[in-house]
Image (cartoon, rainbow, N blue to C red; front, side, top):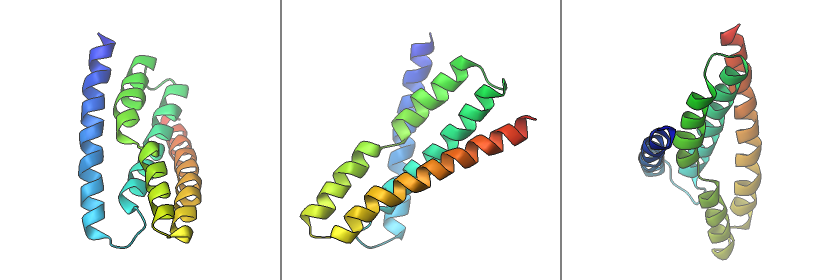
Length: 124
């Protein structure tokens, strides 16, 4: 039965990704893919929270699997980030391409750590 919950969570995550990307991309202009950046950083933050709550014993492994593996697995989109990086390089936007490699990576790791730490503080 968990597979069904993961499938539903995945459908919700993919739909949410589309909505967030649309909302961000229509409000910010330029060559940098801010929608994908926002999605991956916020997804990493939420994954950090889920991980922290799991390690603190506040959520079950099944819940963490559904949320992180289902919803966040479909919500985050590092493959799209790599596609956008290649597209930026093809378009000659070299600085934006390298920024799209480094900035989301650093911000996502920091967001995950922040989420994890926040969850541990909330759980204690």
